Amino acid sequence: MKLLYITNQICGAAGLERVLSIKATALADNYGYEVHIITLNQGKLPLFYSFSKKIKYHDITANGNSINYFRKYLIGIKAKVNEIAPDVISVCDDGLKGFLLPILLRKPCPMIYERHVSKEIEKTTEKINLFKSIKRHIIYKLMYYGGASYDKFIVLTQKNLNEWPLKNTLVINNPLSYNLDTKKSDLTEKVVLAVGRHSYQKGYDRLLSAWEKVIIANPDWKLLIFGKKDKSLGLKKIADDMNLHNSVYFNDPVKNINEQYQKASIFVLSSRYEGFGMVLIEAMIHGVPCVSFDCPYGPSDIIDHNRSGLLVKNGDINDFANQIKKLINSEKLRREIGKKAVEKARKFSPEIIIPQWVELFKSLNINK
Image (cartoon, rainbow, N blue to C red; front, top):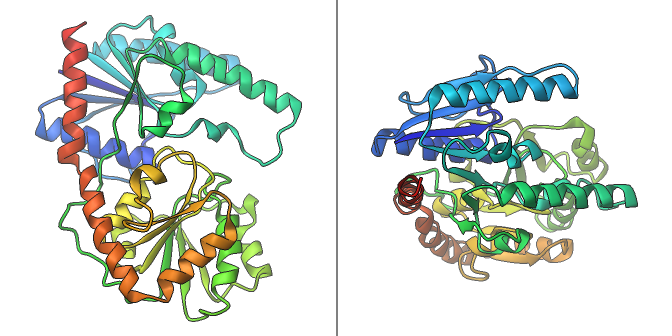
């Protein structure tokens, strides 16, 4: 079967790129698929994650004002699709144009949409004025219209289904990115770890507020944050103003992030919203107990509260700090939760998740 993924870029260090590298590589190497990936304005930028050498890459260049940009993109995408002639197209583009591709391309074959984030991504601040509210409403209507045009609309968790009033939805979780026997943390280092780009979504401002409360009685612990930095958020200044400069360390993304999981004793997810929370299962397979806000959506599908991790009411900074302190103060509890975390993470292994995709592709191709 000839499978085409359409996305924006795969050179970054974000979750979508990581997940696509796992799925596309498994399908090409283990299932004999002819896998193609179309990117946009990626050029010759190097890939951050490892992809199968069997995958065939195509890039579209689009620039200029909005009209010229869209025109060049549409011409380019149509030409590439005609050239590749895929049996199935899977779109991994969280932007509005991704929703409209079945209409723009006149659906040349069965098409799947993969939603990797919550609809809440349209929310970039706590305050929403009337204009932004109307704009979001219009965008959502267009999303529903375009989403309904796909043969299948894939979301990552059961609770994600609540966001999409569509009849073509299907839940397929993200696959784990590490082997089940990967080296575990010994949970003795005084290190709390967070992984993800600097953004409103990731809620590092909330994490710093919680950490300010944690560090009072635990000054010898460190908070390590790995992710693409955004100086406009002023996170370093926030940390400095809170006098956290000796306990909080901001680091760029690293390919060998598994080494950081292996050193951590606690993992924290402070996001305001998620599509899944890939970093949670990555930490869990390393035996690291997680503290996460119960944000929409993902954490509550991954973590069983007080068993394989600790969930906190979204936005409750005091309780978030208390749950971190609970794990800091009890190595026994860290080990108990870490052991259960490994068991839960195994349920997301590629050996379980990838066959679900294979069955979906087969069913769509049969019905073509």
